[in-house]
Image 1 (cartoon, rainbow, N blue to C red):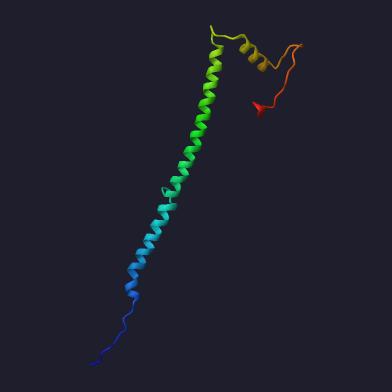
Image 2: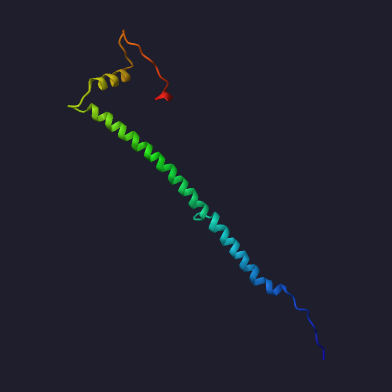
Length: 107
């Protein structure tokens, strides 16, 4: 009777755990770097803060413009405001006036 003796190999025991580690590494990588991952969440929050700042600036500009328009309404018309807007639009000044030209960035 022939008997074969085989040495037990440990590689068979490592197949399932190594596959589990590979799957966990794959899904862990995509949980952090994926389209809906943690890193994307931080980017979206930073973008939301940036856009909120822009929205606040636009709202402040709108309030300022509404205030200036209110000064032009009938009954509250201020002659100085009307004169300033007309001179700016027509680029005119009187002969006895001193005009100081400011660069556009200074406004």
